[in-house]
Amino acid sequence: MPQQEGSHLQTPHMRTEAHTPAYWAMTLEELTAKLHSRQRALGLLRWLWHRPPTLPQTLELPPHLEAVGHRWLSLLQPHMPPLLPEVLQRLQAEDGTCKALLGLGEARVEAVYIPQRGRNTLCLSCQYGCTRRCVFCATASMGFMRHLKAEEMLAQFFLLRWVRPEVAVRNVVFMGMGEPMDNLEEVLRAVQILTQPGGPCLRAQKVTVSTSGILPGMQRFLEESQASLALSLNATTEEQRNRLMPQNRLWPMGELLALLRRYGKLQPKREHFVSYLMLKGLNDSEEDAVRLAHLLKGIPVRLNLIPFNAHEGSPFEAPSIEKLKGFWQNLKAAGVRCLVRWPKGQEVAAACGQLAGGASTRRGQKLAASAEAKT
Image (cartoon, rainbow, N blue to C red; front, side):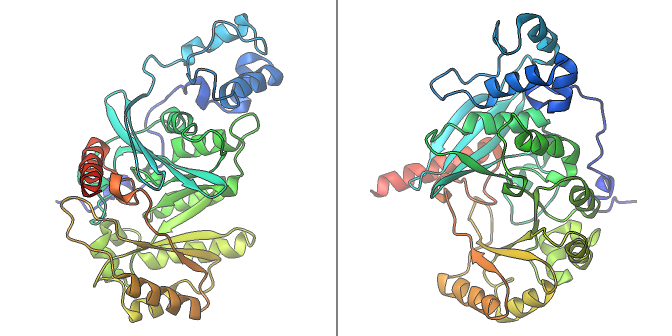
């Protein structure tokens, strides 16, 4: 009997094997227990996350750290993985967006630094490949190799935050390679480290975890985390979404939105994000705008309209700018809080939906070389 799309992943957010985290992916409580002192734990975290950019940016434990002491540091040696991430390549776009290809053991994943006025955003990956099969996404074409551990996600943050050290990183989005809800145990740990005292100390609302719509994972996330949730919707009918995102047959769009509507009442101060990828001739009509406004009614939501970012082998296109603006205006007139998220880093294949490990980096090199030749 053929297996239904995603049926083997109906509870994907459960950890399948025991794992001892690296010291930089341990919670403050875990470090306090290990070092027998909250003060020592905070001293270690300050050394790790708040050192000046002029000092060596390494995850190796030093032989001596005054705030901790050699005796206590030695207890963390079992939590020092033998393989540290390697920056295999960096590509920078004209708008300052920087994409890094990282070697995490056998895995090749990409993370993106996105400059914005007065703040920076880091886009992190949570899987090598992706467990889902969204037809418009370059990462989905890779298939799925493995989940990333929390320390591998945090290493992406660690290595990319100094692209522009004079501007603080204030936002993190788990919108790179992979489906976070299929690796939720490790994603929740990474979010906790990013927001806990002594660490990067990001506000929970400034950490956004995206999902293609994995209902059990979404429910658990909303219960256990204060971080922001972003649902990638991309359609206004179930039939439309079934074609674009096959897992919609397991967890229909109506059920996903009903969950957000229910938690909007349970957590009235919490706001959600909905992403809507705009595809020429498929989901960009005036009727789609009307249906979308109706679907979002009663949900505390901010809508991001995302023009499709082209990648090799994809048959899709973005609508014209006029079409995008008309769609946005129709939604605004219907009372929907929305904005168009214009692409960043497109010429180095760093924009939404373009990440695909080394393949995306090779594609980015070609695009960057082509752009340079034209100038």
